[in-house]
Image 1 (tube, rainbow, N blue to C red):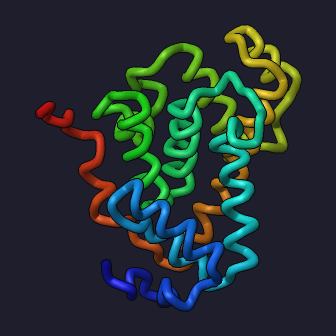
Image 2 (cartoon, rainbow, N blue to C red; image 1 turned 90 degrees about the vertical axis):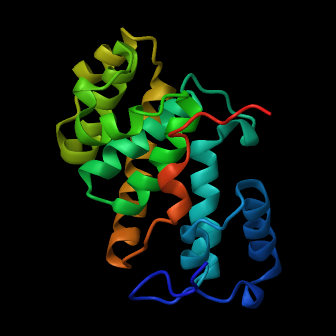
Length: 200
């Protein structure tokens, strides 16, 4: 991995980081086989790193906080990929698109939702979810009760709707941080989930 993977802000040396952050980054590296650039790039400001990933985990892995949700992991990654494309964030589209392909077990879905989710191979429920996420992303001031009614018809409850909105809003922040800092996607992300693994 090139430590200078952003043009504007050099990533810190992992050995210079606080113990708690270094331990979490190493755990991610052991699980995925590489360190996603976002983990090192944001670690230049440890307090912000902790706050960012605490909120990230609360939204993307609510079960770790003992909270249930009707949104699947694939749903969550689909929201991120779709709205990140609307925000023109290369890092998040590539990184979360890779996770989306794996979660949904569909090698084409990430490219489809990033380009035009209305024509993607997704369910009517997911399309309604993305309609709302895109409204929050681009026109949050126009959200009204009819949007809730439309989502209720697909089985989403009010807490699910909060999740859709919060994921969209949080990654709006993430998209802008990645874009302004010129954060580059790790090369590994581009191929993940595109070709089925060969069974031994």
